[in-house]
Image 1: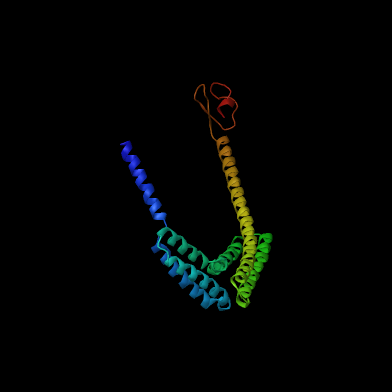
Image 2: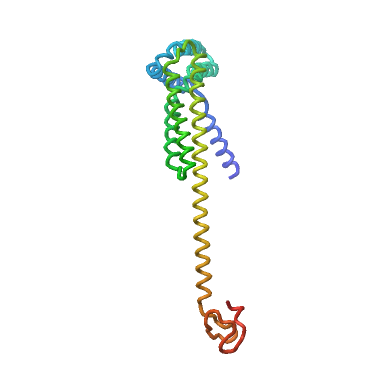
Amino acid sequence: MKNFIFLAFLGALLLGQTACKRSVEGETQSWEANKGNIQKLSAKYSNFKPAFEEILKKAEAKMSEAQGLSDEKAKISAMSEANSIIRPKFVRGLEGMDRKISTLEDLMAKAAQQSKDHSDRDAAWAAKSSGDRAIREARELIRSAKVSSAAVADGIVSDAERQLASAQKRLQEVVKVAKEKAEADKQAQADEKAAETAKEEAEEKKASPIKCAHCGNMNKPGSLKCSSCTAPLEQNK
């Protein structure tokens, strides 16, 4: 039984390693997807064309080199490097730019929805203004940039990402404060309701007849002694 469990574990481990292992086929699929992505981005950000052409030329050279290798391990490594070259920092940044902007816009709406008091609304308005400005400036920076190389492209996209990240951080803080206030108000209401319930229960208990522990006689609320046996009733309250 122990041998069976060990072999099963070993098989699962080897299967997992095989699944995670890179292959020529996998790198080829990634390469085709990356080239297609570059074409789409080139059409959308035409002013980045020199940077796209630069990285594509370098990546194609590396991929051509990889295709000439006979050793499979070396070939896969070179193909992987080609796929890394074709997706530098600015490409990854442009890929995620629309998503970052969408996230920022969602945060602006959330900040406005969660802001209840005057101070929160003022903070949300200021943060939204900052977010709107960051989006406009990031878009304009990328749209009007004169890109001459991949290095220049990296710097431009990084600047745009920093603007968006700064606005996002400010909005997240506004949402966090508003959420904490809402939770505190909710807890205060719950505590107040619990206190009212406890008070009502105490008053109801005081208004209830008191049963004598000695003779079982039921006495009027507030009685100090049993009307039947005169035993003290304090212990029965």
